[in-house]
Image (cartoon, rainbow, N blue to C red; front, side):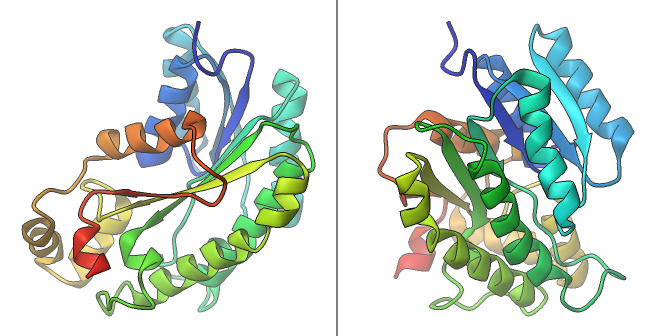
Length: 247
């Protein structure tokens, strides 16, 4: 018996990276998983195929989280496909991409996160959980400076976390718990790649300071753990390298 048998999870931004790895872990624990993507359907379908080949259940659902109609459709897809919605992993983030507007980071990392949580919560039953994935660079941005190239994204993600935390009393009334997972820079993610491009040597510098940087798969394990961990609502799980940010 898996920890998530008869449960349904949405993992936003799960056609690659941390989201994809998390989706596969949750499926392995018995959850039916909605694999969300913005544009790359073939990539999402590949993740679904891998889950199904391992005996799990999954469906790929496209959607731009900055569009309310897509958010509502994504939340409803979980119920329509598998009969319930019990877990929401808010993994999708961005803001370093070009050509999407100066306010894109805030629209995605704050406004879209709130919209997705609200849409999901209206369909969730008591005992459900929401997990928000962030970075130490964002979580601690008000007390610890980060790289110039990442600061707008970090501040938008911090704004998103703050806005989501303001919904905890509303979630508690529904019997839904909310947990944050914060990690250091993750090797192999698109964000780390873009930061390295903007600031050569950034990854090696952070690796030396932290002593170790988690891989995508290693960090996904920690995210997945928080889906069923016995922690209080509002808990923040700090994964790797947080000592530098707490001094």
